[in-house]
Amino acid sequence: MSDRLNRLMPKAGWVAAVIVLLALPLYVDGFWLSAGLVAMAAAVGAVGLTLLVGAAGQLSFAHAFFLAVGAYGYACFSGEPGAATLGLGLPPALGAALAIAVTGALGLAFSPVASRLRGIYLGVASLSLVFVGQHLLHNLTGVTGGFNGRDTPMFTLAGFDVTGSEPPVTVAGVPFGATERLWYLGLVALAGAGVIARNLLRGRTGRALRMVRDSEVAAAVLGVDVRRSKATAFVVSSMFAGAAGVLSALALDRVVPDYFGLLLSVEFLAMIVIGGLGSVGGAVTGAAFVTLLPIVLARYSGVLPLVADAGSGGVDAAVLARFCYGAAVVLVILIQPDGLAGLGRRLRARLGPAVPSLQEST
Amino acid sequence: MSTLRVDEVSVRFGALVALDAVSFTVEPGTVHAVIGPNGAGKSTCLNVLSGVYRPDAGRVYLDDRELTRLRPHHIARLGIARTFQNIEVSGAETVEDNLMLGRHHLMRPRLAATAFGLPSVAREERRHRTRVREIADFLGLSAALDRPAALLPYGLRKRLELARALAMEPRLLLLDEPVAGMDGAETAEMADVILRVRTELGVTVVLVEHDMGMVTRIADRVTVLDFGRRIFDGSPAAMAADPAVVEAYLGGAPSSTKEPA
Image (cartoon, rainbow over all chains, first blue to last red; front, side, top):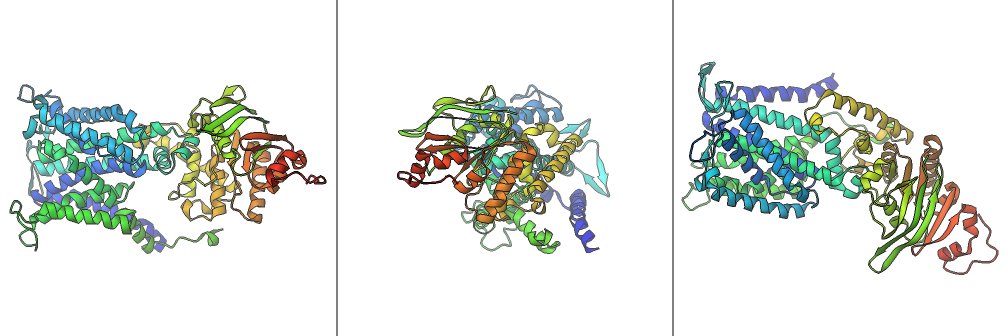
């Protein structure tokens, strides 16, 4: 009886979470939905980065670069033709798919480097991509719009506006505008990213990546092509970043170069470390923590002590949030190296059925 | 059945000659031991055979196929599996998942199909898990399948690494000090396992070992290295009587009346 209960509990938890997320636009105002969308976009990217850093043990700072490629790629492919910035006017879904494909292709182009370097050395090499990216975003004004960036083209699917309000939809008395509609696209993207990453991590690919991380020599003599594995991890991870870029562009409505700087890459690393390296659920949780914390702090800066208004010279919400997740990273590394995911596993183990010890089971 | 032929292999690390024109042949279906004092070049030899090191001179053949220019994962795919002196298993992974890694080269590489969770991928995975459980059974690891490898006692972890190598369905198994750090009972058990691997699975075994007792008990043929040179190649009985071997191990002239064990 209690055994069955224990097996059903996690499933019930998932179902409840899905229902809450689906119903949220009915109860929560646009501000929180927008914040949630930014978090979902970040979560898609974090899931991709945890494949590379957590599973394969390869450090990368290039994530912001690949996010930029996804975001600007979508803007170019589906942007209106004839405007000041390049636009090909492709259908948005196709534009988004092409943007992800281009991100993967750029990841592949960098993979001769990514497959030969290991760990922190790749981290240093990948910094170059962020700097090249920043330079191009600022100076390729015909494509990127330069310093001021460019607008994100509207996302429509078969005549239905996902980031607009045509045709009008009202659910339970709540008019579904752009934010509400985009919320569901975000959920679909996040669910897809999570399932794909989990399938990869649980299967042949994930096992090989983790062995490469633990010992390249051991992986090689087991028949794993080490370079190919590392290249695969890099390409797949960059495609996740591309998808995250498209979603960020849609959530933010405008793409600007400053958003895709080194700080974004560092934030992504903070997300997956806080969440627990190599864990999909951890990456999502970490992404929510790192993206929502500054938004929450800013929202309540009026009532929170020690938080100054932005621009007033004191410790504003963004700075305080950075202190907080900086402290969180240190705490995780010192106390709970498996991050929030490890904490969850421990709690479940304590609540769940006791695992029989080896002696008893033999 | 395949014959492994090591032909005049030399490996140098700077001025140090780790292997100096070493040759020997491993006949199919035998247990072939490579022994020698510390620093004799035993592990280097194994690293050459598995493709981790590329020799400076000489060649290694599996039947007519030259291995010396292949990368380690290609050699693994030809059916040569190995273990390490300092156990290289993924500690956080379960025993079963560690064993599944041995199946890596037997499973089809289908990235997109895996990503989208196609049923054929799940079927393939199940098929290999069944085989992996049989192998765990063969080596007495069944009770530990769901445990993280790091929680296993030392002896079982050694055995897990051997099981993972067997999961590759190899023709040739290279073992790097399989009983290092084991007590008498564990050593006897491991010796028994190795003999069963040869007789029941028909796998040829190359064994790098320190433990002379174990070697004389289970090896069909022995190659002795000293300072990178081959000083003996023959049966274990002949080895114990060989003056060069006795000198290398005892560091002096052989006592005239030493009997073979």
